[in-house]
Length: 116
Length: 116
Image 1: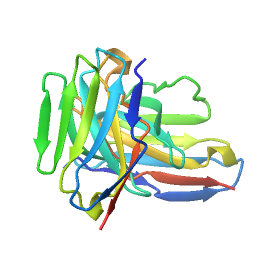
Image 2: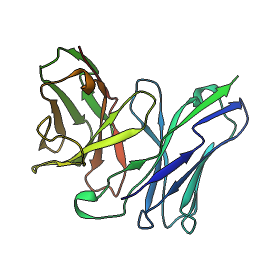
Image 3: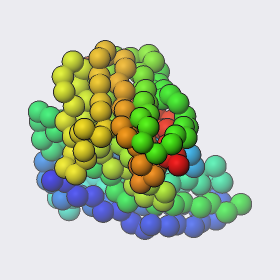
């Protein structure tokens, strides 16, 4: 099955700096890679996603890049703000059909802290 | 759009009793719903995949007789934790996959279960 590794486990930045979180995946058939933001005591919130036919996607201060050959994808947050502080999870899916369709495999999570 | 609710948001029950958690897609139809479990400071672990009108598919190591899942309609799935024990205490989160959508999953706010 799919295996997703996420780094770093914790990331501390100053307000205004950029933050980068990286993930690698094992199943070359995976073709959908979402990123989720989870605040304490809440469910994950989809913040951006990318499909395997796209190399980069941007939404305001957030961008995701995908390297299919190397099987890794990254989340980039620019001009970080204190409200960006949360746990971020990467995930991968799409490798199989039938009952496996849509099953997300999550990375271990990154605790991002943005200091004012 | 794409709102998923869970009820209750938190519940405390005594050991040996059963607890039912509801997951609803409020503004879309969900052909598939997923149930996750999350321990403190850990990632989300998929428990089972629930398809409307059919039996749930459980992940390896998840006891289907203990975690009963029902997906009776396109907007409602329920998870019943039977004969709960303290080790079942956890954060349970559902997600819903929209009918007609490729891969996007939308997560509920989670249910905190504490078994005393």
